[in-house]
Length: 90
Image (cartoon, rainbow, N blue to C red; front, side, top):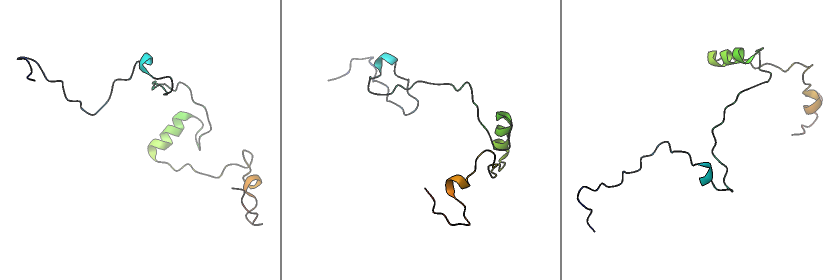
């Protein structure tokens, strides 16, 4: 069958970003792709009293890894004393 004069072919699909489906079009069994925003964050960051300092360490490529202070966590209570060769529980 010939196309009528002046008709256009549908544009070829190009790879790239797709328009998100409307909530009504999403199946009940599939998780919906919904954009989210993190509006708060809390935690303890190595050698950083706050998140801005931690981000500065990351940007600078600083190595902030150090032994966890004993008053925060005693790893020996979990993994045993390596001098006594207690088998690991892992």
